[in-house]
Image 1 (cartoon, rainbow, N blue to C red):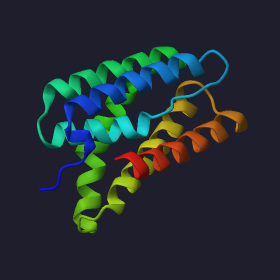
Image 2: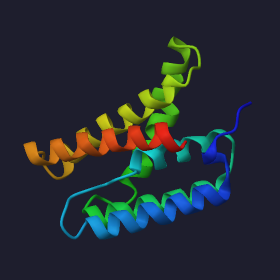
Image 3: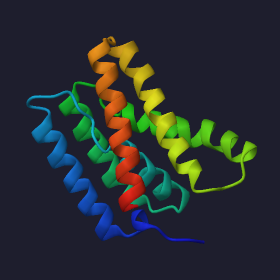
Image 4: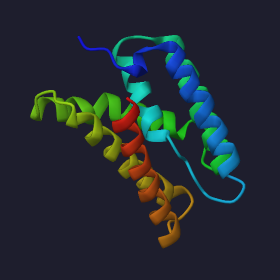
Length: 146
């Protein structure tokens, strides 16, 4: 079994602090949920490998991002659990494991986030473009550092 940076608790804790800081600073002028796709992959790894304490810290980070962005509490956690329980096993049955699956999981997370955002807060062209840009930033960040 291969290990990546999301298995390292020190790296994960540092990533959580960076995500909270970036979302706090950027929420003043922008509507961002930056690094939530990478946090989703961390949550996925924690659940898959049963690192429950690390998963708890990721849930707290999701909660902080949700409150900062105006989303309902625990909505990102519920979206992540839905993808982990229902969608990702279907993808794993269709496709054999490859590194590209992680990128597909992040894209599915953002598709679910766009659907959730449009249901709860309404969706404008500006918000849609911001979410797409956040997805691209997360994919680049995940590819370079993880």
